Length: 165
Image (cartoon, rainbow, N blue to C red; front, side):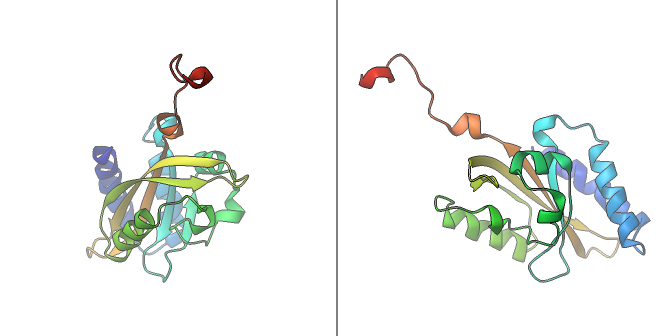
């Protein structure tokens, strides 16, 4: 997974270089570039956030993110990439603190985190954070990719657990 993030980061650095003066074209180019990498459907949910503004607002989310979260683009845009709007009572505070630290220190990391869809359904995600640097080595964006791992986290009913055995 981190290899994919590294490849995306390299491609995004190229986009930053090519479009550094035109932010809208730049973001569109990055989003298009990521989508064209032909990642599997489970790896293609992502957000782009502005790393230069307080609270790191979301500047782009792809359709796959909208599908897994239940939110539409208009509801997500300009919210913090910390995704606090998806936290619930069982979202682990230590994981949230680790995400905060990663963003504030412009680091790359990955987490398993329990978030909640718009309809309050629990959603376990593998969240990867990758800082995107421009040609001057300044972090200008964060790429957050999401992989739904809910099926791996749910208890599995077996013959031993059915019927209270």
